[in-house]
Length: 398
Image 1 (cartoon, rainbow, N blue to C red):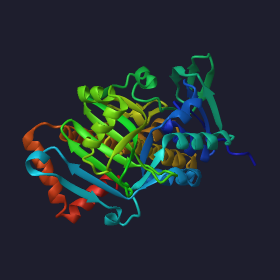
Image 2 (image 1 turned 90 degrees about the horizontal axis):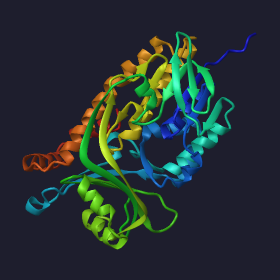
Image 3 (image 1 turned 90 degrees about the vertical axis):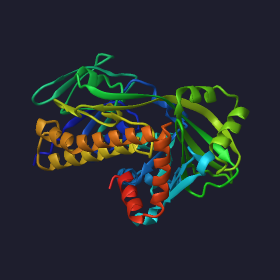
Image 4 (image 1 turned 45 degrees about the vertical axis):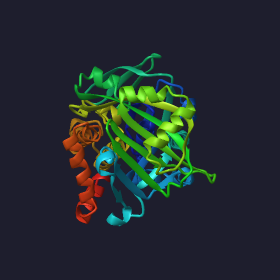
């Protein structure tokens, strides 16, 4: 009896999305070859964390790495939104969302990027279906009826059934395929950093809305008695640049005030990172034997933990479609199979990018009418359990 032959897939980019994609496909015995232009030994230096919602946690469990990640991950038990934009005139308005309102234990976990990267990569290196090419990138690709050929900067040539771009928002594959994007830029920067604080976070994420953008405090799990959190602060570019240039003592005073004292005295831990805030959506997610996922396909402001969680939704959808195609002995890179992915993901991705764009505009508005409306809406949510439940489900992708 002939052994079943499994197809090969080529992945460009080995960030978190590329690692998750490779892991799920390798579990289906698909041969995966990845190309990453940078030195992945620097993965351990990534101090950022990601608030993963429950579907992503389910993926980590399916791969078999969750038990190694969970001890370092902070459960997200509550989500609080505070409107501070009009506090001087009418006081604060706030609302708290709890997982029990939708019959779940928690919304997800705040996971250290470095731990996740290392565990995913360690799992892949033990898988015989995985091949890794470091400090090399795909510079050309040619799609045919039955395969796709890639050439790399180091001169390697490789054939596969499907090419997956996990390259990020400046995807070279997307540009070579001449797939246009819809892009929105804001006069806004995001800054991320870790802090210690005198008051316990009690597993609560707090998003403070003010003029310029949200100031979000996401709890961290620590082995010490000291409480720590990750902060994601979006604001006008001038404000962030000025805050970024402050000495640590001045910065501590500023962020303690910005946080309204809800975590007590706050002190910076480690370095600050900043980047421009933008939205971007590819006009299609596929081309011949080529598929775009994660930030190659969509970019959105870091609001509501939607960015990387939307990428995980892409990966789950692609995995399920490929799995079904294999079961039916179909070519996983065929036009028919890739159209299924585009039909499933493009409308959902487009609506999410647009929705986060609107939320960001509302969160950064200086319009007094919109700020009052925003405050009143939060107050109304406290009186409407059904609407709260609907919003929670929407945020969780249900």
